[in-house]
Length: 564
Ligand code: ARG
Image 1 (cartoon, protein in one colour):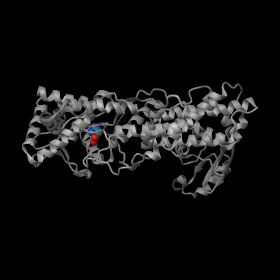
Image 2: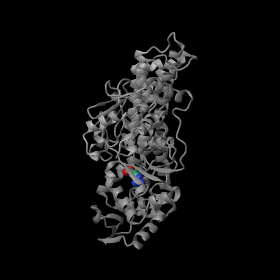
Image 3: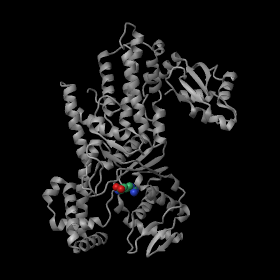
Image 4: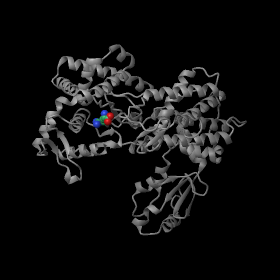
């Protein structure tokens, strides 16, 4: 990548402003009259105590960039310092980055490790559409950070501890049907739960029985543990199908129960550090100095809590992985929980507490059925959503391209990709309303649109065959060709930004931008012409687009079909 922002930014000197700030502030523009790159001088007005217009004019007067081989001309306009690139020079260099191979290559390994806690489903509970965001945001961040040179550890922190498992054993022993569970997986287990709660209303003895079974799990009773292991196995088999479809993997499935024997050490350490106080028999860490309710560590009966386990988990991850960052991709409903846990880690004196970060995201609802909740009983299983999307994609492709071979595989890529893209298209903190029709549209800002554009590139390349020639700089005097190249050249910077902000949507939106730029270019430029160099150069732009789309799609978990 030709890091044009860095090169240009590095040659602009403004006394009193940090050089890095200048490069950071440069923005790209396609609008006529706004330069190819612009420096908004508003940002520096306060520090320099000068109006932006004057700052921009001073840059012109100083003749800065007049010696740059990349710059055609500069102008001051309304507080902006606009920079026009020498298209021929920029074009030839940026394109040679692609022609020499590896334009989308990963960054060199940096020897640093990042833990990502994502998906983190609950045993014997449905993998519902609410888990879609954590699974795909985490899965995408996993790939983005790997691309950026980090060593990434993906962790599915299973929710596999709590009194509900005692209830489930009780229900299973009373009414369990192995054949049904084998056939229906978690749905079968869920029915047992529902029945348990219904019957417990009239028969309080059931709750006691559930508690007693949970006690047996805690005490390590062989039968209870065996059943518990069975529920876990059933659940992992069910969710495994979804992970396969999404192509998301984990390096560890250490969940809540894994930390059982590490809890006493956490409690002891809190005690020794004088952080535990009694509150109506329970043990808590007082956080009133930080404007937060107390963090519950032990209930009055001595039972541990979610936070206790997360404290042990963080310590374990630091010891085991020596992370430089420890991320938790969890819904914003748990904001307080993580703030409390991180604050307690700080109070415990762990200097790495600041490396623990909550990456929150919003809620999902389905346009076709309304709000989603486990409690209301109208649970929407993610697997059903994916299968529905695949079936709908199949129907669309059947009409659009009736002779397509491998339709089933393509429909899978398009259907699943459509769902994933919708989940990654907007800022993660925004709540989203999911609609099959919108996400499966081949036009508009969708996964299928990106995949279709990729397939289009592939078919142009295939039809063209080998074209011999050199770079024709004249190709870039066309705005559409130049804008496309400017974008493609920006790929590595965009991936780095998506990582730094933990925001795959930055990459999603960039890819849409690339696809739109490509389609505009393709509409106004004939690729194969009588001039070999022009054909070669335009075809290289198509190849470059395909390479960036394919890699970019992979980083947001989408697969790029060669034909569609
Ligand atoms: N299982 C939890 C849930 O579904 C999420 C766990 C997130 N990870 C953690 N370390 N607390 O809400």
